Length: 276
Image (cartoon, rainbow, N blue to C red; front, top):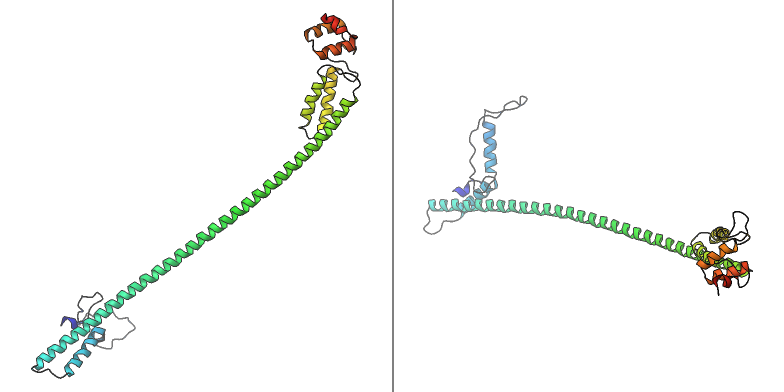
């Protein structure tokens, strides 16, 4: 008989038949149409009789009662069997409702999972887009760096080309100076020119640098009408006395100094001073 009683929202909780309930508060604008509590009682019984379990149980009870009695079955037995069939019908309806609620919960879970998957796919796509943009920026940065390196290489090549041209011009100028000399320069003079020639090769305008530094060397060695600083008098520009020059020659009897001494003081003068 319990199967005939409609189940509550939770399966297994018996449905309590409606009884007279206290009168609920009614809006002031609504006029009462029946005795206090009568409307709620009728509505409760209507809902009870229209529940799927009760309707199914009543239909099954009626169908079972219309069946002919089995041999040896009494009226009470048929009534009892009909109640049992009605309870089974109500139980099947409750089970169907339980499975339906389960399916609804499962469908809701699947819908939520689908929404979560969609959101996750959206995040994954955003990550892919961000990674693609980062990769594009890296490619652009590498391309810019390669272009900058190419420009720097071109500038370096152009600089080397200009340096080679300047070096060639400097060599030609230097060879012109060496080839035009008609006198023997003082010892160390040519070495000094080689030094400033090497230094001039590193300058932007090597010829201008060489001319500027050569003037200093000329003044130092007394070339071009200027007496050497180490052999000149106070301001006369004449060679130093032979005895003082002889002291310098004895201290540094190099072939260059001997040659220069002979040119200034006569052939064989160096040999006489050195006793050779």
